[in-house]
Length: 163
Image 1 (tube, rainbow, N blue to C red):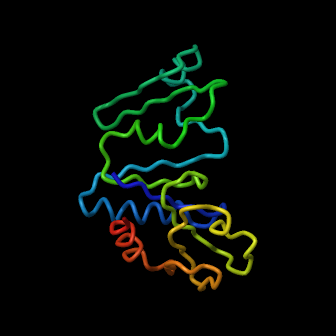
Image 2 (image 1 turned 60 degrees about the vertical axis):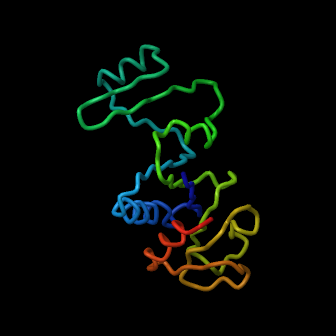
């Protein structure tokens, strides 16, 4: 199983590139999974649904299932946030996991840069395992591989061939 991350500041295009990469990988019949880190509280459930009422009543884990999909919701309460490696362990036999966020973890990452005129915002100067950049302007401070934003197929090939 291969794990590859996309990092960048808010509105840098992480989700767009995740979508494009996932689409390309899926079209090659790979089992693709993705993990998205959220810095804010979120809820995928809908108020007043049965599963919502189960959680509201105190169920710490709720699974909702249909003929098309299933989802597991876990209430952490005061427990610490789950680590990326534990979340990956919850996924059933993927060929590749695309991770959006989790910039401080040790998996290989591609940084997406929208504003090359602000070197103080470059994450690759502070983080380990940034193995490539996506930016339409060449970043002189970065000596490794750099892709332009329209090079999705090259980016996917790089991910597939990486280590």
